[in-house]
Length: 144
Image (tube, rainbow, N blue to C red; front, top):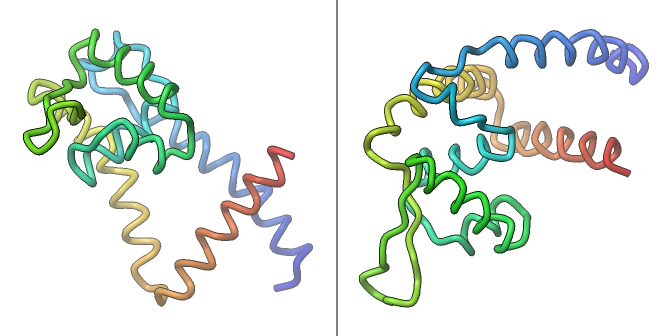
């Protein structure tokens, strides 16, 4: 497949993918929370990687700690997240998903995670790295 053929295929595929992702129903328990895409990334990290500090989340999300702190504060007020004192360092706070929202968030994000796992499983580690790098390069080009 040539580059132009690949571009044509992706120009047809990407809108369909975005449309399908947008049609994934938000669980009733989360509908009133007005979650934005930025919240999904934060919730995904906490769900798949477990509780972590605001600084750790900021590094993974590639944004300033102040930005994450604002999101965490917003979601904490809505009862989605909780901050607990770090047993090893009382100055630090560990952020986690509350037990009352964890299952709804897991159910919501699981479909996408399973789809990615199934799509990426046949690829070698090198091919997966290249795929992720390609998506990042595409996103960067759209940003510039």
